[in-house]
Image (cartoon, rainbow, N blue to C red; front, side, top):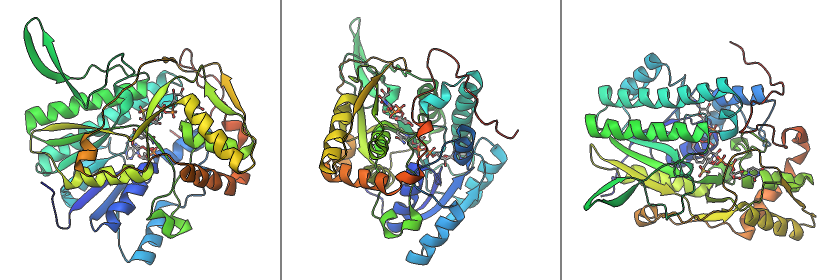
Length: 400
Ligand code: NAD
Ligand code: USQ
């Protein structure tokens, strides 16, 4: 049953790509919103010598603009959720009814740089999520945790992918069990560890949780961000944090060849960022019962990398950009031709109205990339992190 009335929602990771768009959307929709962020992500950009193509403002500046144009305040809590004292006191003081958790290291290549980055990724993600679960258990046991997981937890099995669970008949007995998971990076594995911990917290402490297995997000514009250029969101195009469709659009705008890894038959679930924010709102408004763990597959369409490259090439043709596609040796270890048929009916049943990948969306993404292309640094485009070995090119050392 849909929950109504003004709700207090904490958005963990609200300075990031999905978190910023979501915080504004929820604030616009009348929720009381608080953002938690450590600004780790801005530090990782520094470490990698990479920048978003779009010139994002600092979070306090962005929040000031939002207040100026809408009159709505968003609370800000700056800190690291792996720090128990910090996150427990924020949860205890703020008393959220829902927590939307985006605050993780989310790049597969970053997690595969070397041992240090692998360990950091799993500690950051798994410990942060555990702290959030304990804070809910101890201070706001009615609160609904909406946690961003990933479609990559499933891997690419040769059977249809269900939403979290599958009915298994085994030696004459049957049960509904977690779908077998085969993540393909240390980052994707961290999400699976989270999923197990979240499920446990529901079973043992009665916490209500939704695990959103999200596909690859594309686009930068949401109706709230469109209100003022000073609210502009990140658009990452580097080899570590840039995701495939966003990267291809920036590459096309720069006249760089599109970097298809391997054969390009890898197929992935995807969604527009306008649907990310819609899905989060729907998950909040339709909470699950206490003690229940729900998985929703959060994507709208699937494409192979070759199909994505062809679509970007056709969009380039319309703008008189001659887009060239190149197949590079695949730096990752992944199947390059495989069956892929995931289910995604639950969010549609809750009311999701998808924005499908269209020519107009590609035109607008390309036009944003063209507008800011002079700011681009082409040296961050080619892939440097190889799944098979440690990345030994120099990166900026982070301050201890
Ligand atoms: P992002 O890197 O842009 O944002 C993550 C934010 O979390 C950053 O602002 C960062 O500073 C913050 N953060 C990280 N660790 C933190 C910590 N320990 N304490 C406090 N803040 C911390 O990432 P995004 O693209 O917005 O992704 C958000 C979430 O959605 C991630 O969990 C990611 O795994 C998931 N997801 C993203 C995509 C995608 O295509 N971008 C797809 C599927 C799932
Ligand atoms: N790829 C290319 N060329 C590129 C970049 C990527 O061919 O220049 C290929 C990769 O080999 C891979 C696919 O595109 O097969 C997707 O790569 P990606 O970097 O766009 O996405 P991925 O590493 O899977 O991670 C992203 C987000 C992550 C999220 C995940 C959703 O960074 O936070 O969890 O998408 S999912 O893929 O469903 O697991």
